[in-house]
Length: 420
Image (cartoon, rainbow, N blue to C red; front, side, top):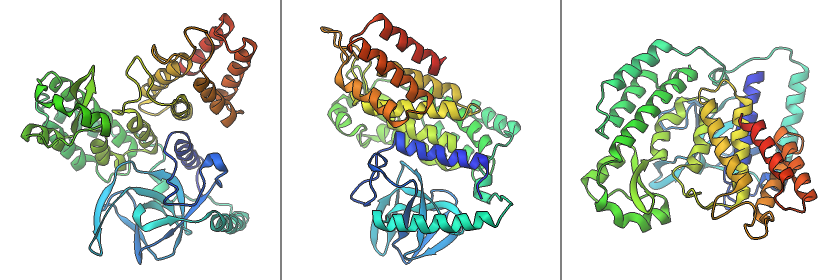
């Protein structure tokens, strides 16, 4: 049985997948998206003769159970953005990992290439059967137990001494040398890999992230004229191959890539590389943060003058950050999540210079932004943010969709409610 906190974490991940992740590809499953009345629970079937369910989304993760072919497992609406390459029966696979639960309540991760989603009809049948069994078990049990995997998500005290030890080690490294990042990662792995206290891992990751940003800033000042020809490639793929010369190869091996700023190639984070290291060690809240951050950085979704994604997509991001801020006030990066919520919400309400929310000539709300506000209001009408946007829509309608003093007052009210 799940504890109260475990349920919060579970539904937090469910919300996250709903609000900000790309919908599960229809080429790999017949299950419809949530917007098309997906059942609240989704089940899968294993495809390989044997499939290991692991404690972490990694080939080195502890094996919790080995599943036989055609085993039914429940998808917990959590998947990694990073992928792992393996060779099985002389065939190469590059896939991510799914978090699942077995019928005997073991939660862990399976390699997604070897599991498939059930069809809608099969899924409905399994949901009905599973819920009937669970109802019977609940009726005959008065004791709630926490399995070892769930225990890892419960609050615990940060091991300050260990975190300070890691911080002191990083202070001895050369911030001018990109290769120091690998040293910092190796030390994190030796000190924190496999420990059950995820809050301590979160605190150590925060220390690493600060160090990583310092190294990034110092090395951004170096001359990158030799890499300006990579602009078309970066614009198309959001990253470069990093195989130009030994220097670029060294950067890639230490968690850096190239991006574009002001039409110039600049040094940037390789978020996928970094998260492969830290994702499996940190808390559900930190993974929640990582997943959303990876959708935004370093992808090109705005250039400070123009919004480059549909406002409805931005609305999903606003919902994600708002949920993280509202649900986990003790999260170690609560202030950073709130800062990102404020940035996204500001753009959603006001737009940017080249893509304003209100037409500069007519002062009338742009339809794409209207759709985004309806998305929030219609999707979650009973939540605080849903009610706030429905109230905003009501004021807009009374103003005949024109920007007015009443509209601006409502905008300010929304900003105060969710970002102060």
